Image (spheres, rainbow, N blue to C red):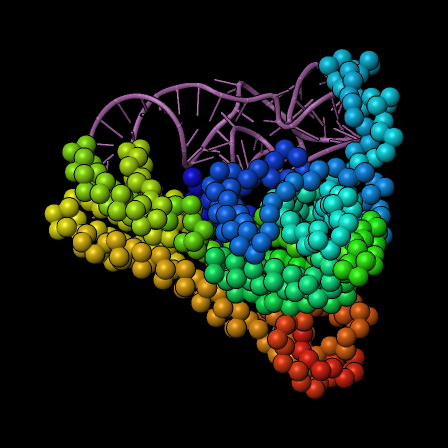
Length: 490
RNA sequence: CGGGGUGUAGCACAGUCCGGUUAGUGUACCUGGUUUGGGACCAGGGGGUCGCAGGUUCGAAUCCUGCCUCCCCGACCA
């Protein structure tokens, strides 16, 4: 373990990388653009999965699994989708290697093992799934289909960052099929609500729910809904999307059903996903110069107990006191780690568990044993207090709830502080450097592109439940009836 | 793909310009001792094809050529 080196305020991306690597979340792999998610990081992802999966099941979805490879002819069926992803697809062209006759001990691709049809490594699964749905759907009685899959996908991005954008990443993708447009739209919105609820109540990250402009829409969708969060550098991060796909994929894959009137109709579709990018959001929203700060609901270890001892006898006494505490906390559903290593000093352990973001730390030594007390420290505010052992269970339980709430509140306050309203172009240019700017827009892709060229800011979304008001576009001056969220984004 | 860096012990780096003992420092690791309420101290020790491949030279971490990695900035990013 080395001493901390990066400050959030001075070198944001250095700070971010430092936390990812030193909190044992992930590291760069031997493959360009890919990462190894380490056990501690993966434990957090598993908690996210559990929370999300429960919500998917509660809203009637089941899990399934589709292939990693998509034949090129299927992939290209939905034209816009194919076009949108074409330039970042990994493609399998051969299925065999052989020893190099000219270079002993080396392998070459066997030219005789060329595939007759190339396979696209999925960047998203609409194509393979809708090709499958074609065989499953004949009648309105077969609908809706409500599926989700947990999978890896590959998108050959030019530039990658741990968790935020990696060549291979883990995600879930929901793919549903419906008899009517209304039903599909309502599914799209329902899943957006699920994501928002998860983000705010579990990740403790406030999000803006909205619709994407045409420029930012998913390739192949009629509408893309999203949740957008603000990071501690004022930039936006798209944290989840839910797409209303209309009948685009049904038409591309010829998926029709007979309705009650015995007429053939194309099926309506949605898809929705969140990825390991959420790990990045979690880090960037809550953490500080001492390391990771985890919301209690996602912390693999919620409480760490650090004994302070000189001798074996001291430790034995402490262990005797601590054991019942551990059982009691565990009985309350709290995950506890007793760090009784005798190879590290307490100060070292304090720093290490702070770096790893454990929400609550308990320290207990001979002094406490004598007084029947224990020291309780919270990660988010660094406050310490000494409490009686008799009060401990409730105290800890309460504290975990408080930390969860406090992290959310801090994030929402920060966002409010960094969000401004702009009515002139000058104001806009000034404020966009700080964070979100609410401004009028004339609704055209050209204007949005122009603003992006000039400022690097994009429309993150048109907020749902937006209040309507008359105004003039920040750039073109043309009339507009609502403000949209502008920001620089990851 | 363009610009800028970078690659030397697990990690962070010095040494490279100007070639020349046995490649060094901090940290981590191992052993022993003293320590332990905020990242301990002392002593001893182990660990290196100096990114890879060629070349120049009596001699290369250092000079030359080619290739590659990773990072940062940009373009790209459903």
